[in-house]
Image (cartoon, rainbow, N blue to C red; front, side, top):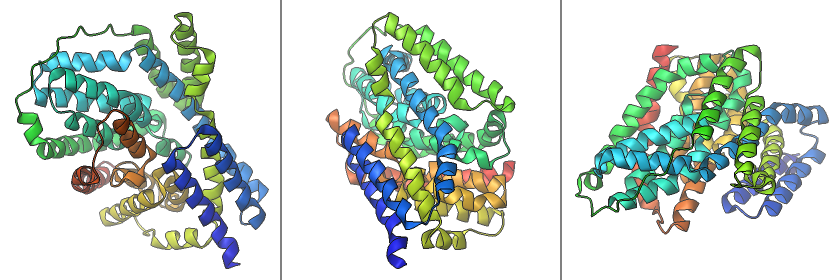
Length: 411
């Protein structure tokens, strides 16, 4: 019996190792399918359990696929480059002002287009803007990283963790934003203050001579489509319209627009959707469902507090943080949210604080962290483990405690 219980854990470890290694799409797909297939003969999860898991994850994965296409078209159209160029122009080359603009831009991109767009698509243009302004690239790079996790609190669509938690919340799209808005405001102030303190030398240094480059035109069609998409999320939520329907409409509109201008082909759009990763996420859900039914799920359930006092909410957030950094926040969401859901909405939101903010504690907390690091390495800006943890070990605990305190006040 013990060996049977270990199968889901072994399958999860294989999936996590694959996610960290980031192999080719074919390898990623094959490993995901094999891991899911391995847990089925154990009998820990039934066919009905698997179908229920896939129904729960299906709309979330569909949103992931379509929002990746939306973000890719926006990047091809030059939206991120134009926004970063305008931030650089407004800053006048002053490092502190440039950092402030990048910080706010990264938060906005995370809120509207999800954290993956921030780490994969925005970070490179932020580094280029800093180089053009003659300032250090490190403050802007870490602003993108921190905002990718911490700014993903505001909307259900800002992070897959939020979307996975929504069925356990009696909140509409707008209701979620109203509750989490004050929390995010507190987190932004804390994160900004911490980053300004940690990078005070770079942000007060005199900039090198700048390269004057004309700012590219802002592509208004992508801006309008993304704006309408966000409005559609808010309008559709009370009517029971799943976000993926709206993001699908936005993706179709942008792909059609970009294809007519020969910015991308249909195969390129399909590649941007990362279908192998979408299947990988579904397989991860099946494996975590099996894990939740075993001894690990029981032990985690024993650690969940019985109430929703400030101390209890902090304990839930810390538990979610620990699980996120051990299992990645996506796996941890599937495991911990159903366990805290009986305590009510506030408990689920506290868990999301740990799953989002807390995932910034280590590289293993979020796949976004690993994508950010991989992108910097490709650009010749390899971040050291010391630098990463110098920021994360200071910013994450302070932001998490402040966020829990804000949540306790508004709920």
